Amino acid sequence: MKSLRLAFLSVAFMYVLTAMTPLAAAAAHKAEKARSAKITGTVVSRDGNAVTVQDKKDGSTKIVNITDKTTINRDKFLSHTPMKMTALVPGLSIHAEGFVNVEGQIDAKRVKFRPDAFAIAVAQQQQIMGNQAAASHAQTTADQGVANAAAAQSSAGQAQETANQGVAAAQAAAVATQAVNKRVSDLGDYTTVATAGVYFANNSSRLSDSGKAALDQVISTNSNLNGYLIEIAGYTSNTGDTNYNQKLSERRAAAVAQYLRENAGVAMWRIVVPAGYGETHPAASNDDAKDRALNRRVEVRILVSKGQHEDSQVAIAQP
Image (cartoon, rainbow, N blue to C red; front, side, top):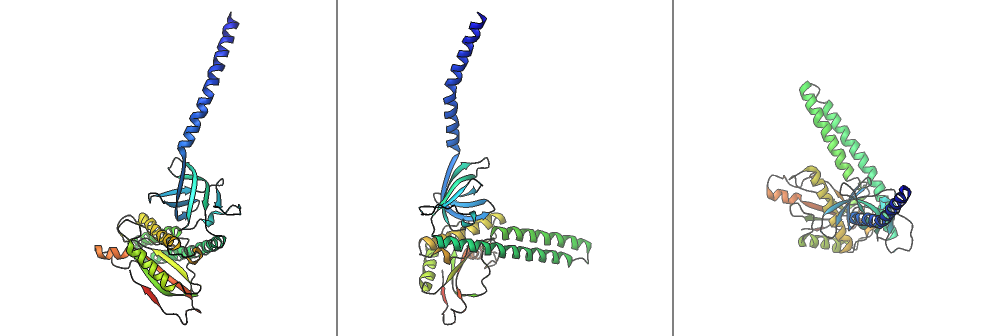
């Protein structure tokens, strides 16, 4: 009788286990589906494996993490050779799919984009040059901070205060430089032949109609130049948090780069990797609303080699 009872319980247990397995699998699938995420937008900046992307749908920014398991490919391209992460430069439009992690970021499973092969080669070279230039600039700034601290040794209290300020300034400069380490600054063989200023509303990276007109004008005026390049630098006023303003300046530079590529017909390889400089290099004093409006800007420069510039005329597009 006891053996019969045990046999019955075993059969009942197996029945319940068999019935629950599909439910558990369905629940796991539903949970995985709920965690899945995708984004289509423009690369704003990249810090290590973390790529900041501005969502095309609502303008918000999200962090997309590139892992060892992430595949990066050119969309609708005959070659299926995976691309390296260095191809994800600011201004590039991408589509990423993956899963949301506990920090609310997207761990990418796959990333796709669609520039031509030559543009990618140029972008990779720009990335290498930008990293080298940024590292050199960060070291120079840190050395200057240390020198300033050493110069104040005549007073113990003053020396300590100056040293703290020097180290803090050097650290802040290093962080800012890392954030914009994609900039190509070795342009000694080029000269500026045209400039344009694009201005933004407070706390915004959206191009205005007047900003678009300024970009259209400077491109149409100089599109006949041979071998020209375009340098893009974003800035903010000093209102608000410094780190936030750094990211805002990057979004403004990326917005201009995207407009030039998608609406003004500028080839990607002509654009020197766009950079944001936050509150640095103000065009005005920041003392009042009018001055702060002048600092919420992106500066665009048309560059040509000095040899080709001998007979060129300077054209300036005003906003």
